[in-house]
Image (spheres, one colour):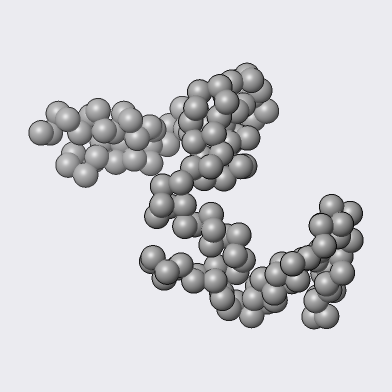
Length: 149
């Protein structure tokens, strides 16, 4: 086990000789070595998918277990990754850092902005498999598909 002081101090005691990149933890160095060779040593016992880092495998396993350890304190929604929770929390704070260059409308997530921009371009990526009609939102496509049943 690595000393906590190197993690928190930012000290890089483990350096990879090929590229010179330094790491606080030897396990991160080992994972980085794999990024040069393309070899992925961490294998999911459930589905066989492989990862460079143990932390990536741990996050992936949550798909199989349904574990969502990061919970929004406002609405109780759970997330498999901290970064997803932090992005979600913008919905509650009202932060809208992604602005549409056409109309100036703001969005809390990049994906929301990209979906919105289809309004301006007319792009309809989601096609009905029965009649071929296009939609901007998956919810609109699902509603439409009921007419074919």
